[in-house]
Length: 109
Ligand code: HEM
Image 1 (cartoon, helix red, strand yellow):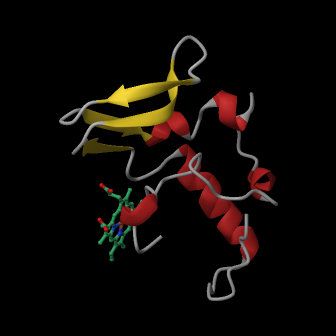
Image 2 (image 1 turned 30 degrees about the horizontal axis):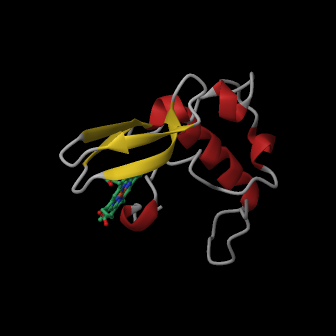
Image 3 (image 1 turned 45 degrees about the vertical axis):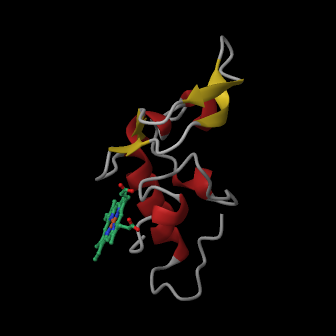
């Protein structure tokens, strides 16, 4: 992860702690969308969660940021622990979404 954003007045170590805080306790805990057309999410179904998921038009899809950001499968057994150094060298991705993601990501992140 690039925490040394040249435009940010915040020092990198503060950003690590900021990320840590928003991972464990995010102001926006959930998000929801309504599917506008039939689609297939590549993984998430089946006993191992690796099979595609068909999502028909009109389905309400909820995302629980809090559960995702404490998921031990993603963050490891110490997922609930205060360990800012876990962010060093980490690339931000869909495992960390306190500001959501994609085209509607919070512009103020
Ligand atoms: C800790 C502070 C903040 C958090 C955690 C946060 C989080 C979020 C999240 C999760 C979304 C996505 C909502 C969705 O897709 O349904 C969002 C969208 C948005 N946020 Fe923030 N936000 C924060 C601060 C702010 C501030 C200070 C502003 C403006 C001054 C702002 C403006 C917006 C706007 C305009 C959107 C809509 C973007 C779009 O739909 O294209 N946010 N924010």
